[in-house]
Amino acid sequence: MSDETNPFKNAQKQLDTAAEVMGLDRNAHAILREPEREIHVHIPVRMDSGQTKVLEGFRVQYNDARGPFKGGIRFHPKENIDTVRALAAWMTWKCSLANIPFGGGKGGIVFDPKSVSEREMEAISRGYIRAIGKFIGPEVDIPAPDVYTTPQIMAWMADEYQKLVGHNAPGVVTGKPLEVGGSEGRFDSTALGGMYVLREAAKYKKIDLKKARIAIQGFGNAGRYALELSKSMFGSKVVAISDSSGGVYDPNGLDIEKLERYKDSGKELKNYAVGEKVGNEKLLELDVDVLIPAAIENQITKDNAGKIKAKILLELANGPVTPEADPILFENGVFDLPDFLVNSGGVIGSYFEWVQNLYNYYWTREEVYGKLDKIISKSFKDTIDTQNAYKAKGKSIDPRTAAYIIAIDRVSKAMKLRGWY
Ligand code: NAD
Image (cartoon, rainbow, N blue to C red; front, side, top):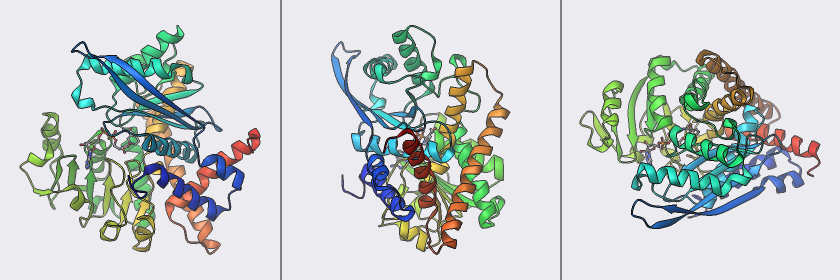
């Protein structure tokens, strides 16, 4: 992994940049550059063949000055500690920017989720919770879904934890199905939050979303809802979308229902017969108004940042833009809204689920959406206000740095008050 694509090095660089601009206390800076705790486990799993496989897993607990650690769990064959560390750091900033009472954490297991049976998947999920069970809990660390982890997996994980502790504690994990303590509105909350940010950004930049052309990279939970909501909320035209196999492009706008039916049949987009084929790299460079990376990290680097034509870059994925790409985008006038603002709807939805679990009192979908809109629109406003406040002082900073300054300031103040430095 080169330095530009090492996500944790990137997370540290982003912190350093903001720390320098805001004049962060060097003791606070030193604490915030490293995770508080890293748990490294090896999980024995009895496979269907009768053989026992030992899978490597991580849980990184980055900072809990403002509340319990909070963050998703990924299942991925290329999962590694640096990615998990970076994601845990970003969760810290995300929860702080949203001003919800959580710190940041993240977890992962190294294996290919497409290669296991349902029974094996359950055994892996439960094994992971047995391995990290002593270090999590509704008041300690609260996992959630992320890449290739589903509500069913969260239900198994919550169940395993509740068996370990011997009482009901659904608030240990969020992203659960409704029947076992999930929240209304949780599953589209990431993309919906991103759309609220897009609405505010378009208003700020005076872009008419009804006439906007949108390209989306990724067709998972985040990308798919972004596709649906772009049309249903704003009437925008989604002209391109991709999955890991490649993408499709139609300058007249894609037929969303047809696309969804096609994907639901389990097929890959590279074989979709409508529109032009477009590779994942070319998709990023299309002449569109809004570009939504909603797949994986390191998609926009110093090599292609100069080719991005979108007016608004809405980072729905975590870490899609490298620090080397940031100044290029900023100079070219791309309004790049950072991941930990744009996709914070997921953790805000998780926060609502956790609160409802603790209270055993459940809200309607409309209540959840209304509360989400309020919190995330405020985060957008705080970010722009901070950017403009620095501009007034003669310092020109991008929205990512502005968002970092807000988040870091809140965590540092909490650490100071708690006497950590
Ligand atoms: P997912 O597993 O549901 O979907 C991932 C999608 O990305 C799939 O369509 C896959 O085909 C596609 N993909 C994989 N590699 C690709 C590549 N090289 N190029 C293009 N597409 C590729 O995952 P998700 O939950 O939608 O998460 C996507 C991103 O959003 C991740 O960065 C994740 O961390 C972030 N995110 C998700 C949530 C959430 O609630 N789901 C919350 C916050 C952040």
